[in-house]
Length: 311
Ligand SMILES: NC(=O)c1ccc[n+]([C@@H]2O[C@H](COP(=O)([O-])OP(=O)(O)OC[C@H]3O[C@@H](n4cnc5c(N)ncnc54)[C@H](OP(=O)(O)O)[C@@H]3O)[C@@H](O)[C@H]2O)c1
Image (cartoon, rainbow, N blue to C red; front, side, top):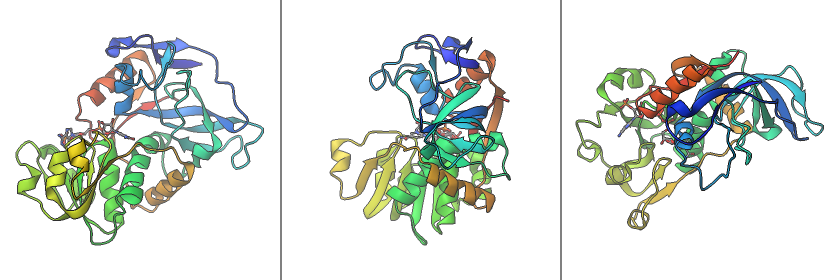
């Protein structure tokens, strides 16, 4: 099968098309013919070697952790999915470094899968798992956002931030977000009540007494400054310091967990029109396509998701 892999850690020129065998299935896995995947910031961070400590991958390493496609094989212990099902998932990260989703076939554990809603395309579905699950898990499970809460999403125009704004609105919150000026009207069209240009204003001079802050840009002190006593901040981009943790406000980090049930819930919200999938741009599964997508992601100014069309 065709895949795009890194042959060494470093800049985008290390991304290359390669040929390798289709993944062998474990009993609890299905094989997905991959129609689309997406690029997340973890991909270029991994390319640069930031995950070296966590995974001792051998090159070539296939990156990518979103898939949408059609099941072509099922393992012996798979009970809830069958050949021909259209699915989407955030697969696990495997120790061999050969199981990323920049590839024509992807092996996925059954419990990470959800059926792709017929109402959305494979490209839209591939834009959802990693970013959407992160947003859902932080806004719902960690920040416990409820009707009437005042919530700030730092980094509202990003892949995660756009899902977070819409999920918080769906739960009935008053939602503020930070973004560059060019994105303000767009964020308001998706439900943000107030958008602050982080280039021009410190949010502490504009907002106060907030119940919850979702930090996707590593600006923990800025977030803490607007929280009320006992308010909660969750960061996915920074590491809270000892001083920040000692604050009277609740500060924690979060790492997303792949989860098929929650992905189905997100799919239901998308079908109901509560959450829209925002795609910045679509690239082909080629050396040039992945290099361009990584460049855009690393710029830090994608608006929504960067999708790779595989089939
Ligand atoms: N811990 C986890 O499990 C987990 C999961 C997913 C993502 N992450 C991390 O979370 C971060 C965000 O992910 P993502 O996919 O949303 O990234 P992304 O799509 O690349 O985010 C790009 C957006 O960030 C905004 N931005 C950049 N600097 C900003 C700032 N100082 N203040 C406000 N907005 C700013 C830009 O908005 P403008 O163009 O409007 O400036 C742009 O729209 C990344 O570091 C990623 O690695 C962690």
